[in-house]
Amino acid sequence: MPGDGRRATRSAVDHFTTSYAGSCSHLERLLSEWRRVERPETSRRREPTIEGRAIDPATGWQISPVVAAALCMKPTRMLSHSQAAKVAVLKEASPSFVVMRRLAMRFRGLLRGADAGKLGSWLDDARHSGIQLLQQFARILSRDIDAVRNAIAEPWSSGQAEGQINRLKTLERAMFGRAGIELLRARMLPIQ
Image (tube, rainbow, N blue to C red):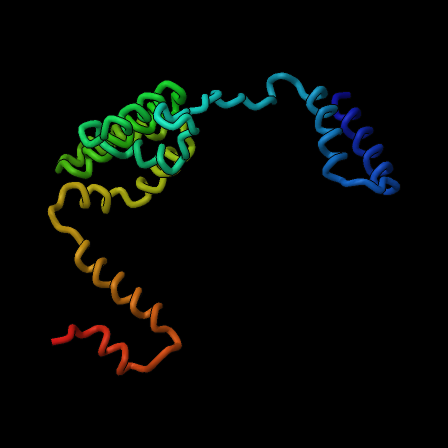
């Protein structure tokens, strides 16, 4: 029976771990090799696509994820020569970067334009992109799709209100535990 080997291994492990003085993580790592041999081929997970290292042509250093994320969102016409070279290296090294950049540019275009009709096809493409974070982002957007469509189609923005709230909360955090309402009022009202 296929399960008998696992049960026998498990009982041997239980017996061994009661008298074993070493680390359980080392034992688990050793036994995982044995368990991998017992599994049939169909139950193995598919390995992800291997991404290459993207080396900055100017410095010879690996391009950091933060820089790659910033370049993924920046339109081609706004890239400097060194940034364009980095984007080319990232595209060559990483098929995922190509997909992410294409979808990011399309989403940027959706937000800048007023056509919410293209949102459905973008969400479908993001769901089928094979990139887990983009799939999660598409699921989150789908939860409140009406609000997203309104944000694309309507000319109004809550930026001014959000900016004032952010300013107020920053002042509040800076003054926490220092003084009373008089000092807060003095800092909030402009000096005339």
